[in-house]
Image (cartoon, rainbow, N blue to C red; front, side):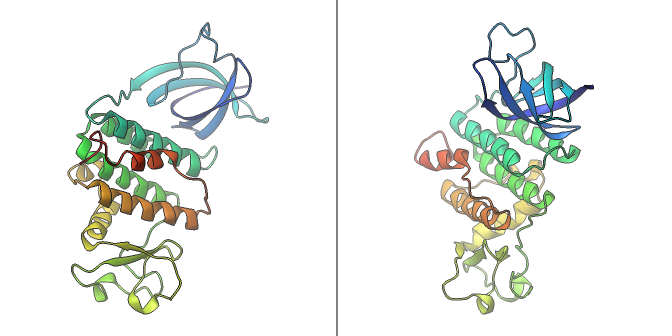
Length: 265
């Protein structure tokens, strides 16, 4: 087996014996890989520690068999401590980032730009003011969807392709259809169909975040209720468009904390 080396983020770990496990990584050079961590659960393991919420230099033996290979060694490159003001919110958004990547990334397909973007996001979640966390994560969510081929239609009607400026009045709520993939004008709306009503200001922020850089989105503050509604729209969109029924546990955890001072309000 060939010995390979790459930068990597830990996405998920699966135990399969008392001493060993399989770990899913997002690697810079090889995409998403599942690697066997032989004896990695033992405290006496001689190689470096595998740490979540950190960028690692991963050395592994590549294999064409059932698994992608075996971990040889790891070295810590940078750790995202997530210990600033609003720690629970930082942990939840970092965890949701890893959940989304695990859920959506294709296996063994290098995505260098997305990898670098994900590392930048975790670094900003670690260091940004807590008021910026929601906008940062929503920007990442939108970027990930678009890069993987799921692009919410926010500027044109999902039914007739009319420009949204032709049917949306300033201050009026906007109807978002997860099933049709975006905003739907009044003429194309059908009785009995499921829509999410987005407040006009919230819709404008979602449009802004769709094309914003991480540094630009960091300047935009969202309230918790507004964040919850926009995230719900994107999660429902993902469920319909990518045929994914599993819930993002980290976002559910955030909702349970909506009255906590550790979050945004």
